[in-house]
Amino acid sequence: MISRKSLALALFGLMLASGTALAQSNEIRIGVALEPPALDPTAGAAEAIDVVVYQNIFEGLVRIDQSGAVQPGLADSWSISEDGLTYRFVLHEGITFHDGTSFDAEDVKFTFDRLLAEDSVNAQKALYAPISAVSVIDPATVEFTLSRPDGLFLFNLGRGDAVIVAPESADSNGTEPIGTGPFAFVQWDRGSRVVLEQYGPYWGDLPALTKATYLFISDTATMTNALLAGDVDGTNNFAPEALAVFEGNPQFKVLVGSTEGETILSTNNRKAPFDDLRVRQAMAHALDRQEIIDGATYGYGVPIGTHFAPHHPYYLDLVGTYPHDLEKAKALLAEAGYPDGFSATLKLPPVAYARLSGQIIASQFAEVGIKLELINAEWAQWLEDVFANKDFDLTIISHVEPFDIGIYANPDYYFGYDNADVQALNETLNATTDEAERQALAQEIQTVIAVDAVNGYLFELAQTGVWNAKLDGMWQNAPVEGVVLRDIHWVE
Image (cartoon, rainbow, N blue to C red; front, side):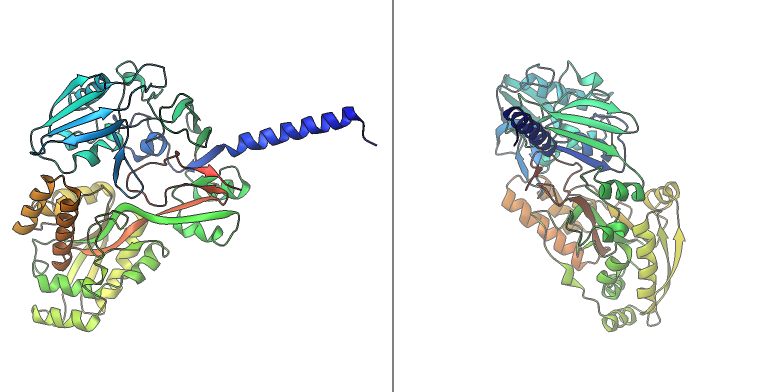
């Protein structure tokens, strides 16, 4: 028979154990491949910075959600003048930075004055060039005056490059970041981890997680072992060639989504024979996307038919514009004066998806008489020869900038597409703020470049996350860089 004292001790021990389990269930350990060089997203270009801090430590006036849409952030609401040149934001009140200092319109002005200053080191400073003035109307109201309409202005305000910082802490954010987000910085053990904890006075809804640790694990085998051993609870972008270890394992969930990486067979439109639409159409018909996706991404790429991310609300599915049809490809080549095909070079940067895709495409093109010489290039050589000097026939590359369809309106861009209609459409798009009108214009540009077969549209790079099966709320897609913690929670 158990004594009362023993029973009390047993119950106390059970309570302690339950409390420990509860505490653990509110924490998460995330494995990431790259350690950030610093922790200030307004002063560095590395994606690894945003993976840790975006929407966790730092917030902007607006934020980007998983679909790529703009949502309120530190600004509760905004209005836009009829000419599209004035944006007035009404801020949430009662917000504090993690050091206890208050947030108001002066911090917004400071942030953008700093971003636009002559000595600014912001990696995306050019995106904010249309801003001619930032005016404080009152502590809860700030106004931006633009020199020209910019339809992407709100989206760009939601990027990590435009998060709001305070004058008291801006200079030290690289090593001790202080923001307004739901998580506060605790420590950075260089070469090992960054630790964040829930910020209790957070102005919005508190997240379910109370602590998040980012562990830096660059080696795929080491990451695999850490996941299997339970040393990390998940990773946002795991090597696709190793995903088979976790697929079908009930202890894990594999989330496959898309990123902003449009992978294309980039084509030199200035150069014969690629300046002939029929040749580009023939190449489009010769491509077997699924074979490329299976071979180069282990089946995890998302097929695309134009230069736009499938997760974006403006996306138009144009994959069927030029279906795989070898006979049609041969007929178009003959019509263009190349009945026996032609020879060309395919310059490949040093990334696996490009090198693998190149081998597959060379085999596919050989079936219609197009003989490709594969030339492997290191990044510096690729950037100089292909991107800067435009010395190439074909290349394979992923374009990872969000909403970058405007590159097709630049005839000096490396693939040399010059279409006055697209240039006019893009100019109208940039000056338009109405969402429905913007969507229609973006979809019209998507259609034109698909029909013109400007490039060979292959696939969207996949985001392949591996997570503990009891976790939920992770982003499946990646419209911007970051591992956003606010919705992640443990489930029974």
